[in-house]
Image (tube, rainbow, N blue to C red):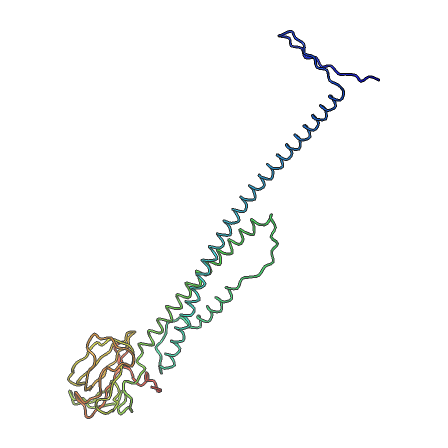
Amino acid sequence: MAKKDYTILIISQQAAKVKKFILSPLTLKIGAAVLGILIVVSAFMVYNYITFQKKVSELHALRAETNSQQEEIRSFMEKITLLEKQLDKLKEMEKQVAKDLKEVSELKKNIKTPPKATKKKTSLVKKEEVEFKENLSFREEEVSVLDKERNRLVSRMHQDLLELHKEFSQREQNFKELKEFLQAQKSILLATPSLWPVIGRISSGFGDTRLSSSSGGTRPHMGIDIPAPSGTPVVAPADGLVSFAGREAEYGRLICLDHGHGYSTMFGHLKDLFVQTGDKVKRGQTIGTVGTSGKSTGPHLHYEVRFNGNPVNPARYLNQSS
């Protein structure tokens, strides 16, 4: 049986021409196959393009999310760094407070009659240290990091860090107040005349009745007398400022020290003066020597302690271990 050919006519209305194409069945099949292949290839390319665009869009979204997470991580790191600095600062303040507390305790041990402190109690130091250590420990929580809860968890972490920052600030303020309190206590203790100005026995006590050279009557002794060989060093019983250093009719060569916080001391009948008015002296510093200047019957130190201008018994303040 003869194969049939296919004829394709193309008619042009303007030129009134007819173009004729004769296609064999084989040619038509080949053309159909090529057209099918082109359609499949085109569809595959379109699919690949759509898939590629989708992946590009997802990549952009992942990059944006990554950038957002990096910003959050940077924010957390900055806050954590700040908290670490505050923690280091609080540790330094804790060491300083412990050091001040130790110095105050040692000074109190060396003082027979310590001055009255303010209404605050040093027990606050231990309380603040305990609370500080308890609040520094973070609670360990098991959290399931799910995408739908990430925003909530991030917000919660920000809030926790903010609260921790506030707590650190409050602790820092508490430590500052404790440090100021301990410094004040230390200053009071350093101003308390606790050292013996010269080592010896007390030959005439505070309040003893003695004759007055000016009136001829009797008067109470406003200090204590400590006999010692002439030239024996006399030391400052506490830190202070020399308010007077010179001669006086009754006391002879006299030194007066202002220790602050209401305390002052007087040293009479001296032989030598090693300080001048306006000098600052430290606890234990030699300020003069025992002598017989003024109205004295023999070498000794006349020692007075005054609190807010009123004479008090120096023996109450003398450290027995000095």
